[in-house]
Image (cartoon, rainbow, N blue to C red; front, top):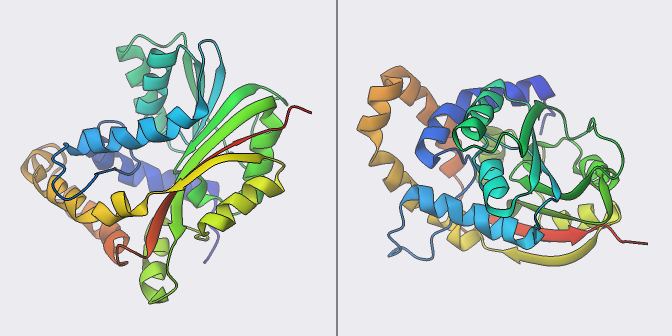
Amino acid sequence: METIGTSEIGTHYDERSPITDELRDGQVHMWYWYDDEDDAPLRDAVHRITRKVTDTLGLRPGERLLDAGCGPGETAVFLAGRYGVEVTGITLSGYELDQAARRSAANGVTHLTRFERADYMALPFPDGSFDAVLALESLQNAPDPGRVFSEFFRVLRPGGRVSFSDFSLESEKEPERVATFMSTLKLPQLPTLDGWLGYARAAGFEIEEYTQCGPRVYGRKSKYIKAALGRREELLAKFGEEALAEFASRHHGFFVPRKDQIGYVIVSARRPRG
């Protein structure tokens, strides 16, 4: 898979985030439905992932959190308001930076949040700057995940925590389907669960918790399609036919793999105190 630069990643999210932002209310990550009978609205299903991943961090009031790949800011705003943590959000997308700042102001948490353009391959923060790091579906675009984990390790204080979630490879059958998925999302690679754990351990982290919940995430892609189609007229009125058609075209490859081919992992680890 061809490695792409930071500017292209920024453009990728500038192009896809506005409609995704509208569909998922400021959260551009995945959803979580318990079964096909689960009638939770899309926004609530997406917020389940927010809570499921961030709960593993064990955040406390006053702690400093790096949201590495903050999207349009809803997760940072939620965490600042719920836990009283100081959140620094980084992204390569100008659209996401603007939306994050707007959401922070609208929710009265500007004193707890700041957002900046930065590359997690070379973080512009001193050693030990943070108590915790969150990477919610942002590692997938890293050309060198090992380098990113090393940067997370560096900017965390001893005893600091990292939690991340992302896609994983669950089946090597029909690799052309997976290749289409990866190309659509601009993924340089698609690690297995063991692969993700290996990157974290190689950087020096101690793994404390992990899960693979792909069947309730990517495995429920048909529920997302139904939810999105149910809002088509609303999106059409706001964005227009051409933008909506382009959005659908860009995302077609995301749905190509079988639902058992793509997993979803959540991992929490700690920088040793010693």
